[in-house]
Image (tube, rainbow, N blue to C red):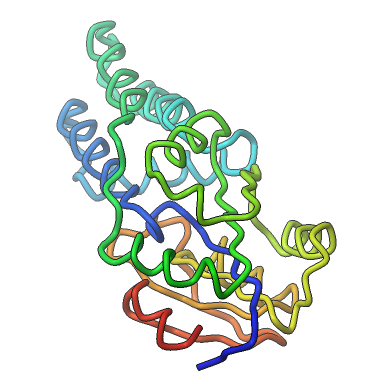
Length: 229
């Protein structure tokens, strides 16, 4: 446990509140709607993953981009001729993921504990309007002295964030659930990282955690942060 003041950069989706589960539910509904005659559900999902991967980084991820990906997948796999009503329904499934997110257990209490002791920074990628709405509805913005919504999170963006905010990288920790966006690029940038896995982390965010110059701490729950910070 450290008593020295640290810079804690914290992810939002599936770290502070549930997010991927809503998209997973929509994907299951889409696959049922498609009702492909020869491909299994797993095969349809694999093709959708390919489409999402191809578009990653080209536009901010959110319900609009998700709807476009579902639309492209429908056009690629649907039996000819394409049913306009089903096409519209596919778009609707993807674009109507706006329900308020459920906070993960212990998050509010943990942030309340951490905020007076450390420098909290919210760093969450996605569509600026959608992410801003999630943050507003969560009621958690008061705990952070700085909030940024980048298009992507990679080694360069962590370097830039640390430099722009004047962070001492030896006292800076990235806290998140996604190895690809939260943990590995932060470690590569010389930051420390706290990995808190989520059971439904987006498939494209999963990869083997690679060691970097920074320290790595793995926890099971967000609430455990109070034991170390």
